[in-house]
Length: 474
Ligand code: FAD
Ligand code: ZN
Image (cartoon, rainbow, N blue to C red):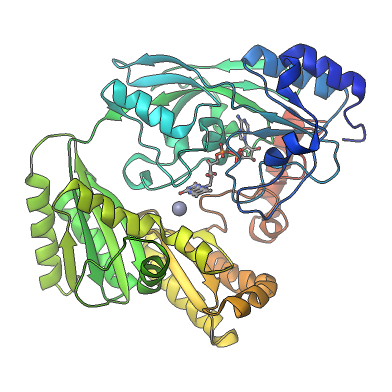
């Protein structure tokens, strides 16, 4: 496997398939495709190939498969686990899908759109909007990540609570298999019980089973009214109870429920210009709550105000501020959305993207924090995330930058402490970002031997020579 690098003759054939300037081999040109967004993973590729059609992808894959050259599918290269960059061998070929960026069709009556893998997520949100529809996938990287990458990582983000992960947003796929055959599964059906649902094999496969070239995506009614509040709560447990209470009173209208600790907000105030505390006194914990509805009018504000009023009476909320305008709404969301950036500006941290059953989020935070503080008394825990999905971004650092870099060396022990608690609560060590190369060893400890066997069997069936994104996931 991968014992052959891309020979000069192969490079020439690739150029004939996709055009000379769409095969990049020089050091300078390859560089942006060989390094990840965080600057943690650095590889070296034989070439970067940029096909513009499914047919070109198929021809490229056939050529590479014939010589058993490792293929790294790549979209916007925003992976946070090293999934989208080549290894250091200089033998793998990156197949970047960014030129496949056409919206092939929009069918408003069927509430679907058929799009190519290289469409940037923000462009698709806009395309849906132009047809008076919503494509609800939304994440921090939406200006650069591409739908093929979103599908391949089963991306989450802030809309999951109401609309589900990317997996829930797809009806059909077109995939170039590791031998170059094209599977046309671009069905736009909401009901189809004709055997195994193959598309779900490729969703979340991180490019290890084939290259997604196009997809049929679901569209939704656009929200016409929104109500947003930042709510101070005493603890994650109070936040959990608040979530249950809100759902009892307003049901499906709860579209956002993001937990934020005070430490996160302080980091944002310190590092992000034009941010300030919209509440009078500090609280240890907050939730950013959003209600949405596809009917017009201001009833949502009243609903939220009433719900928060009764939550306060029940002792579940200690303070709250409702956004009175779209500008204020954006300012509240900016507090949540800038946590990662603020933390990055503050220094290094050891990050965990974990999930547990929603009901056990408070227990996870309490147990993991107690275990970490016992071992590292001056640790700084930056916990925030999609509480409504049971997904916590649980990042550990030190408040002094110089200590923080040294602390990074403790990653294995810190990870172990956190993941053991996650495992004990039947959780997942990767809720959103995937395994890539980052967690390829760790997952062996936390998935059963049987589950890993089944995964390997699927990989072997579809990719017997192991050329699709070698070294990732398994
Ligand atoms: P890439 O990074 O290029 O690739 C990701 C993986 O998919 C790789 O394994 C690659 O081989 C594979 N792949 C890419 N395209 C294809 C294809 N067409 N066919 C087969 N395999 C393919 N993730 C979340 O889930 N939720 C978040 O809230 C979130 N926020 C983020 C915020 C920031 C600022 C950043 C930088 C990242 C964030 N991410 C988040 C992670 C990342 O953006 C997502 O994983 C995204 O879906 C990756 O898309 P991409 O096009 O950049 O894919
Ligand atoms: Zn997230």
